[in-house]
Length: 167
Image (cartoon, rainbow, N blue to C red):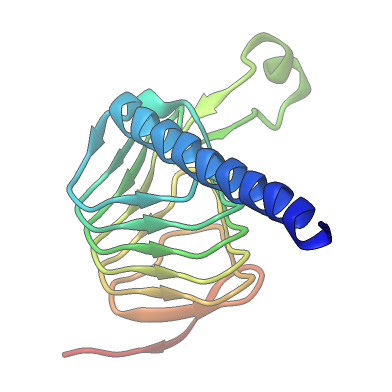
């Protein structure tokens, strides 16, 4: 009798797990339809967060992993074959520094552009107005405050060029 009573909860648990996965897949597909543009083979983790879908475009075969937050209202453009690791923050919106302007103009829009074949390491923060050049690597935990040249590795807070590579 004991083994039979355990089978029902185990089966129910599997069913609930399956339904949760299917619901998350549906939600992600719905997100993709809300983006300004979404390429083929794009993978968005159901555990990432995107605010301002209409400001975001993501091209073919790019991946956004879990617990990454993207604030796209000011424009976020992600190229082809981009890997964005977990726990990252990408923001295209900011506030004025001047207190009087902050009260009257709550948000400033500054687009973020991530070009093709970029790898963004775990826990990276990308601030508004930044462009990350093609084939660049942003090391884990970096805070990107200014443009990153193509074919470079940047690390640190603020992110600095560690080395260049390529042709």
